[in-house]
Length: 304
Ligand code: ATP
Ligand code: RIB
Image (cartoon, rainbow, N blue to C red; front, side, top):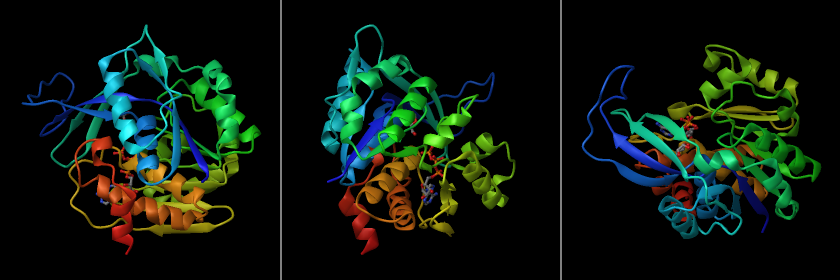
């Protein structure tokens, strides 16, 4: 089986379900807080493993009980956590999340150990990159580490999938050249391209991305589904499955992971995107990050 390597963040999510997220200067009361394993890297590793991919995660955690919760969760998914680095001097990453009455979230990430994952850690794990077929990256670890990982993976001839979330203030132009498939949501694509009203300008935005050196773009459009635009495979829109969304947390992460799993099984981009669209549609009907990620069987039932 082809191997997926996720290089990225692990956070323990502290989730508050509220009517609305507090505005500046406002205090909002909430009766309960839930602790749920999350972090974009960990969610993607969890989802890739749960969906049947041979998956390893490379990331950093503190020497604390939050790290143990995260490791236990990842182990349940079947992901290989043996390359996780423990930093005794850092705390495990934390995300403070509010989920509002529409199921939309606001997230504050306290990076902790995630901020300590450096290019040297990637270099030390070069054999891991050599042994994998596809590398998934997101942007909750230092930008220099994302850039180093993408460059090395590309040099080694691996497929590089970048989920550019959260978009950094200065996205290095060079990075586009190392990325085979870019998977932003609408807001992220708008930030990257500088284009407003992006939903009416998807073809233009895709041409911009292709011009930067990345040949394949999939933009997730929330309840509107997705737009795919590939230099080799052409362009199409795929509508979302109609569901009642309660919490969108980890929808994007599951989408990314599902794409990777299907591509590693030999699917084309469109088939992979259709599969990812179904997997993510299940996520939004459930609460939390890793707690909402479906098994392969659940997705296959929708395809039957
Ligand atoms: P998040 O950051 O909340 O995890 P995102 O903003 O990265 O998500 P979205 O574009 O909101 O990503 O959603 C990713 C995918 O999840 C969509 O392309 C779609 O397949 C699925 N999805 C999201 N919201 C809905 C919805 N309301 N109904 C059905 N599918 C949805
Ligand atoms: O993409 C969702 C994730 O973003 C959450 O699990 C949270 O940890 C933040 O990193």
